[in-house]
Length: 454
Image 1 (cartoon, rainbow, N blue to C red):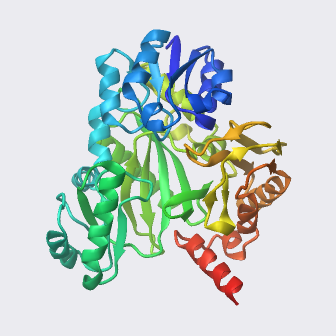
Image 2 (image 1 turned 30 degrees about the vertical axis):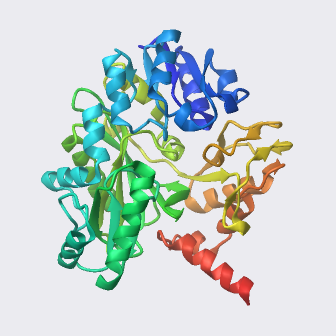
Image 3 (image 1 turned 135 degrees about the vertical axis):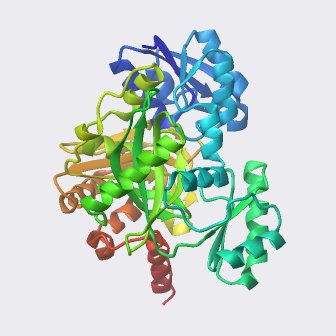
């Protein structure tokens, strides 16, 4: 087992990893930018190293500075968390070259699965259902239009590299294609420094279902059930739950088998997520693979009892999986809300500033993953997520009521948050019924705008 792990991240995920390491008897090293000098993760770790100025390009995205901090501190492994360098194959490769264990998959697997068209082709060869679409990289609108005609409209143009909803545009008709392609490609170049695109048939109003997988270095692969991530805005998830109300046990088994097949085809190791789009007809299609721990991993932890961060660390250290597929049991229902520093009434405008006072809920079946405290200053340089509120109950109805109660207790003064907006969702009849898809938030916002206009 590792003696010391450096966490190449910040905020609540850094705190989460530090706590897991502490329970395993592993020393931790935090890295921080000048803006994060007083951040909670720097105070909880055994050591803390400043790696540069506030902009992430000069700190949390600086491979050289993070590697230097690892060497200086004597850490023998790096946990990247999510975001920043967590899916950067060059960074994983650099770790290997410096004899530092990267707690995640290999650089080669990361490259293959991070490139959407390559990942898609891998799935096709493995017999995993995929959305009809292009198999080769596309660089110009004329070629793209020819391929789109063969796929059938509507189509969605996507960045081959990247994520987070950037570099994506839908074309409903051939007339809309050129503008959609050029706009998506321009955005892709700006966000990821790459102009490689691919095209898929646009699946209308699906659910976003992802399966958590674990794979060790000895060919053992299991899944830990699904998470329903259909409540999202601009392709950014807001609420996640497990299990999904839309999935029967028979469908869960089929999708789980496909997820395991996908991971084996990728020769994957460590924790990862296979993401699917699910139609009302129960047809499902592989969308992408996330080669890292996910923001929403706590809901899976709660319904399965498996500590995913600890499993990641054990696998990276060379251990076999600590459980088999038959050991995985789904118990109860868990829901996660992302609490963000933003103002939904002003188009979700970020709200940096100092938290004057705060109270976060607790009690049976309530979990808070956060790194904020009274007097903490929310920086404008990073993601606006303040905390993750997760609840667990014996069924979905009770989980919704528990979440509603917990949201009603939250007090965060000094900045704007989306707590009231989330509270409204948990009182929405459509959400309560479970009849939702990835357009739910867009429809909700459109309805609210129409009401305000009247």
